[in-house]
Amino acid sequence: MKFPGGAAERVARVLLEVGAATAVEVSQTLETSVQATRRSINALLEAGFVESHERTPFGPSPVRGRGRPSVSYSLTPLGRSACDQSYDDLALESLRFIDRSFGRSAVRAFASERAARLISSGDILSIVDSLNSEGYAATLAPASNNSHASQLCQHHCPVVEAASEFPELCEEETAAFGVALGQHVTRLATLAHGDPICTTLIPSPVPSSQVNKQEKSVQHTRNSRVSREVSA
Image (cartoon, rainbow, N blue to C red; front, top):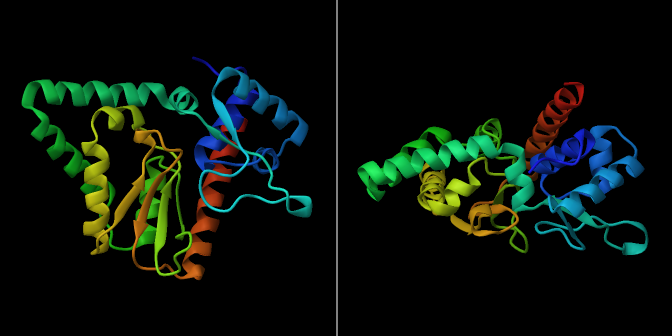
């Protein structure tokens, strides 16, 4: 399926990058009016590309006047698929060929080698940067209700359909996180299982200064990417 117009697609791609966001946040990223952004969001809601949340699927809910939470929006599996269907189709076709020709153990070996290439650094911020360069829209934050742990979030997965059929991709990625960081990590949720976000719990806390640095870097990357798409 195709997006209902170019403006709606630009809104969808912002949500692809940031995960859940309010209409105001999307309009600020695109530098368009909130009214125009809401029109695009309504078109995406009607087409099934976007869903609304009274409370964000992860992290704190945005707040507006008098403590009322703002409605946030995120892409549905259909919306994510529309953003990069061709890449995911190729990944799925390739994995099916490996499975048919060499068996499931070969799929796991491929997944392990791929994860090791993607996640090769022992520094968590470098890992986040690496994930972002591959389109995973990763962020880092203190874990909810646990000041002694951190939470690595991946708001997008370029191969989510492939990972749904071949969970080895997620399993080996989690194992690679643990190896790179030198500690046991726990995968709490995945897009491949239908969750709104991939979440990995890391036992050690990350200093707030590092989290703030990472957030600024991610926001700069997102704004630059969206600006290029708008100009295209």
